Structure formats: structure tokens, C-alpha cells
Image 1: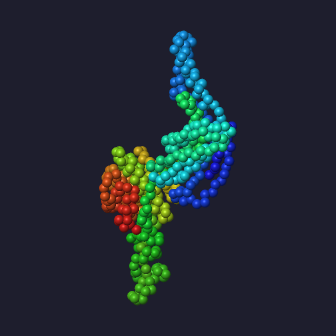
Image 2: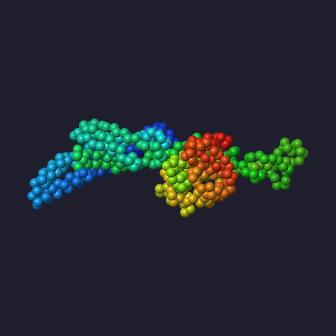
Image 3: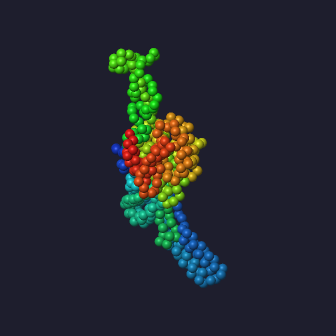
Length: 443
């Protein structure tokens, strides 16, 4: 990234500086990242506040009343108003000689982890910089702190905390230095118009090995089809014309006195699909609906992450349209999941979407694009109607293994049971996903 210094006296000076990061964990991004972005684009605005508008209007009306109405009290009000305006004008004049250097501790964090924005402000002018407010937009909120008088060459570091209690993508910036007169009639803003994003990832539970595709051997999931060429041994049979001699079992041939060949169970490449339901009705409309949905996102992230780490063929999808990535005509939105970072970045953007297709329709769209699935994981809420759940499971009758994860906000024991040929798990916390699968002995 570029290190940018901005001198606001008359022009912008940008000094690119390449920074090498010796070691950085790609998954969690725990190393300190200098996230400095083109802060050279700045704009100074002189703004009159709401109170200032009232003072100016009062002064103008009083002056008109004093001149044309010859009202003595109006002269007093107009003089007081003019005095306030004149006293406030010095806060609008002068040159801003500040250099701004912004640092971000981590640009990607797991929900609940600590992340901060640090701004180093330096007075590059020859005159002291008067007290001001340093403001920065963090997500939808604006955080502000007081700046003292900065002597020429003095520096001041200001830190802002990023609220990571909720999963999402937070916009950091723009940054502004604001000066106000004591009565807040006028204000002068110098904005550094640049912003970047901080990703707050969902919690990912550590899954048992091979839970993403139920892989049991080197090639994939074994089927009931018997073939003459594979690696999962099944039995031996008598030699028939046309059998390859390399499959003759010489030990069995010696015992029976007749040529015997080996048979195998056909194996299939494990193809896993993780489908997240984003319709709000599936999670209820009470105060716990957000908790149910966030638990569902975390559960989907846990299954998908395991598939990515094991290098399995996977399809991660939902009904939420990502920005800049239009969904298919059937409403299915596939999430790019080539790397853990890419997967969690996309899941950070997923939100409830009332216009998304119903879960049975999403499953139908999923099967149209992925006809050879060996495992499907459907993540939804406990408010999903049972008839829709039954339709969903019925459409997956060609899939070798179907798991339905339902999230609940109730303080109930973890349950797992077989319904309509699918494994239905009910979880109350994101970490319960791994516990349920371990309890069931999934390999």
C-alpha cells in the first residue's frame, strides 16, 4: 500500500513509499497492516451551522426593523448579532498545514476481536495549529476526539476503536479536522476524502476432519455400484472373457483352482454444497431473529471453511445478491470460495434478504447447476415451516448425504435426528456445529 502525506497549505504532495510486510497470516491478518490510502485528496469546507443560520437571520431581521421601523430594541439585537458573527469569523480564516498518516491494526478480523484505526497528525506549518476536532467515519457512525494546540513540527496520534461486535463490512473514512467557534456559529472542515473497508468475519468453528464431503478414501465417496477397475476392494469372482489379467487375484486363483478376478466398489469425487437460507421468515420476527441468522451464517462458514481447507469440490451459495455480482436468473447467488479469505469476505457481506427465493426453490436451482452432489448442507432457522423443509429434503433424494442445520435461540439441548432421510441438527450456538458432528461420529 502507499504511504501518503498531505500538506494542505496550497497543494497536495503525495510521496509513495513501498512497504514490505515480512510475515502476515493470510487467514486472520493478525500482523499490523499499514492501511494508508491516497489521503492526498482533501477539501476544505466552510459551513454555517443551524445556530449560525438563526443568528444571521435574527441579525438581518433586527437590522431591517431598526432601520425601517426605528425600533430601539432592534438596534441592540442587530449589534449583538453582528458582534457574535464578527467574533466567530476568525475560526474560518487561516491555512491548514497538517499532514495525515492513517494506520489500521487489522483489515480483517473475526467477530468480537479487537481492531483499531490510528491517525497520526503532524503540523507541517510554521504557525501553531489551533485546537480542533478530529473526526472519522467508522461504518455508519462518526467518531470524534479533541485535538490540542499543535506547535510547528508537533505530532499527535489519535486512535479510534472499530466496533466488531457485529459481522459485516465497515467503511473507514473519510477523515476530517473540524474547527468550530465557541458558540458553534460557523465550522470549518478539512476532509481527506478517502476510505477503505474493514471486514468483520463470522465465527468459524473447528470442524472434524472430512466433514465437508464425507470422503472415506483417496478418490471420494464409495457407491453401491460394482465395477472392475477402482481402488475400493469389494470381492472376487470367476474370470470372464474380456477381463483384464492385471485384476486376477492369484491367491484366490490358487485356492480355488480357477482364475478369479477382483471386483471394486465404484468411488465418486466428493462434491459438497453449502446453501444458506436468507429469508427473514425462516428466522422469525422477534428480538432473537438476528441471533438465529448470525448463528446460521457462522454454521455455513464452518462447513464451507472445512471444504476449502481440505481442497474439496464445493459450492457455497445463498439467495443474497452480492454487490457487483448479479445472481442467476433463478435467484441463486454462488459465493466465490477459492481461498479462506475470499470465502469469509463474501460471507461478511451476506444479510437477510426478503426478496430471496424460498428454500425449496433455491435447492432446485442448486441441483440444476450441481447435478452430481455427494453431500448437501442446508442451513436455515427453526422458524422455517415444516412443509418447506420436507420439500427441500425431498428434492435432495439423489444426494448421498443431506444435513440440515437449524438454528434456535432457545436454551435447549443440542439435538440431531433423521427426518425424511436427512440428518437434521438443531444448534443454539455457532460452536455447536463441531460438537454435533463429533457426537455423531462423522468421519
